[in-house]
Amino acid sequence: MTQDMSGVGEHYAATGVVLRIRAALASLGPEDRPLGTRELGAMDQFHTRGHGATAELAELAGIESTDRVLDLGCGIGGPARLIAASRGCRVIGVDLSEGFVEAARYLSLRTGQQQRVEFHAGSALALDFADASFDVVLLQHVAMNIADRPRLYREIRRLLAPGGRFATYDVVRGEGEALYPAPWARDSRDSFLLDAQATREAVEAAGLRVRAWLDDTPAARSWAAQLKAAASATTSTTSTTSATPGLGVVMGPDFPVQAGNHARNLLEGRVGVLMAVFEAV
Image 1 (tube, rainbow, N blue to C red):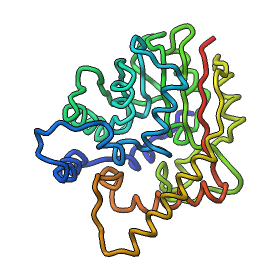
Image 2 (cartoon, one colour):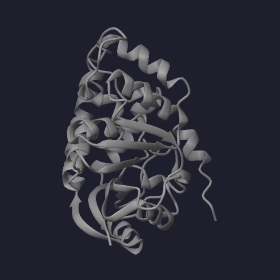
Image 3 (cartoon, rainbow, N blue to C red):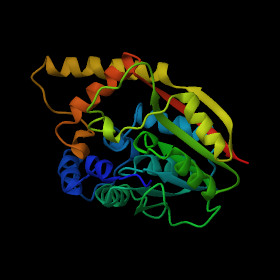
Image 4 (tube, one colour):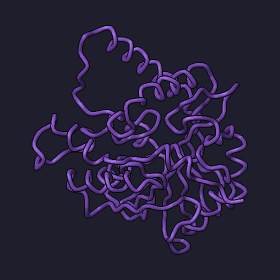
């Protein structure tokens, strides 16, 4: 049975997101001022540990300037831009949300990276690319929205050239039930968490073998604790401004509740975070 992705699509719907981003970025300077990838890091890295996790995953995957890289579930393009800038390669991003894709293109123009990155709307379960089109496929905080993991990982394997790498950084099931709304789902109907071992088995069944395997949960918990402390400090002061725009610009006013639940899920052991690289065999 084909998964109904309408709930996932609705969760990540981004009507008017470019207008919101433009308004938020006005605090950093005029529209014609070039922006750096780190200036956008609080807003365009939509996953645990943000900028740092993307950089570590790229290093773990050994991405080189000659690699053809696909970022599945690219969001508004932060990881693709970071990897293109830091590794010197070209990156294609695909996301289910057309609003996110529009924003990704806009921000790539603002950072002067439109020649190194490109973005398309589409589903991770049915991609319009030829077999063996990529040397590296990245998947960050996407799999928990997909019920048919075997199909997802088979599609990724199809896209990889011989010896290609699949680099994943995703939330995995822990002990107990996750709290919702979370950043990836408003309720459990669109959340399909697997534990780390089940994830590994599903990926390996698609014809990929482990090249690197890291439990990132301790680092993720430290990050969550810092966020929780920062949020408490913010609410105890009269200031409501921030030096850089955050994910609330993209996800809307209820994002702080989602982020708070994600922090609790991590700190209470309800979820963990896996960073791993697999190789096509």
